[in-house]
Image (cartoon, rainbow over all chains, first blue to last red; front, side, top):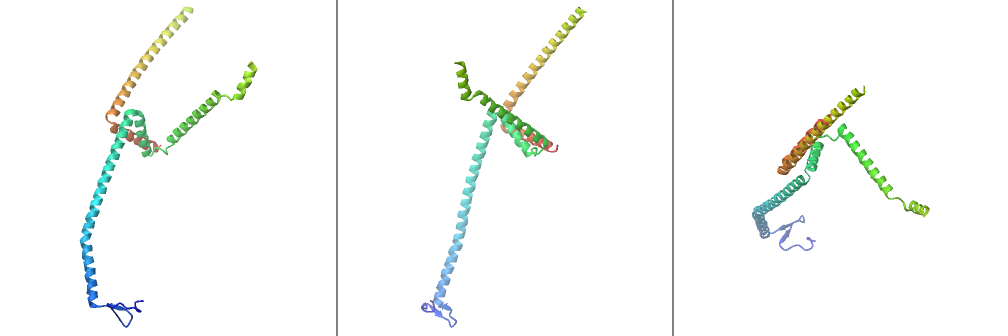
Length: 147
Length: 70
């Protein structure tokens, strides 16, 4: 295309390459210089802006963290005030887990014992409920026999 | 013979009575001690909850560390 309609401001070389005229080249260089200068001038501004943005973000993060820590502290205080033994037991349990006491044989034994007791209690409750709520058919039969 | 048996029964009953009184007294003492301990624990946890929780975590950590070697 460029070969069919050559630009007026360009000169065609024998090899097919187009060379810009001297004036145009100077203009382009000026443009390039201007853009480069603009870029160089705006770079510190952009860095400053980014820095301010980062500072704002850091401040926001710090305030959010502070709020979260306050809320956690308030929650712990409330729990310790209302249920002191449960809080202490929970804290001790966390420490126990962190101390690596979970895989020990004693823990396995206690866990097994606890789960067996829980299953027994659950079954007892289930059976108790079943005994307390008799099915309607035997009751009607009993009524018939009484009358 | 009967008298000696009766004396023995009296002595046994008085001893058992004394033992029961002693046990009752000890039970009352232990109960009062536990109540005091409970009040002190509650007061301490209320006053400085973070110290109490940190102490509990540390105690649990040590216990877990010790039991993990068993």
